[in-house]
Image (tube, rainbow, N blue to C red; front, side, top):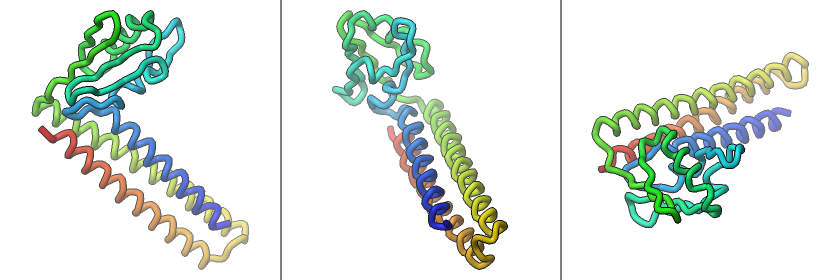
Length: 185
């Protein structure tokens, strides 16, 4: 029973870390990365569609993204979605592909992006703490229903705390790496 709670806790924390990594991949650094735009929603014939499901995205150079839609009729919709996005990039449409030039980040913009990274990291830590709280609540319910002893409950809570600490440390490590990427000139 305690193992089930711990396994569920570990699985949910791993999913929270994956979600954090996915969110951080959308924050742009000084170089082009397809992950910047692949989760962008495009209004494609009245349906919101992810950009990576309707176009090939590549980074042939460090400061250039090339988006090649599989349906050329979608070029206008993709261009409009890129202009509406908060990326601050101007798409160049040549009728075949869309090119996005990634300008070098200014010092002020880098600082804003670092703040955004810290905000995302804090959201990740909050998610981990919520998972921890749920796991401890489940363990306490097991004890209240006399399914485990008080010693087992104490040990389980300690294991949940150790698990949480390990994942919070991983969040900090991911954050340092992303911050270095953003601050890299």
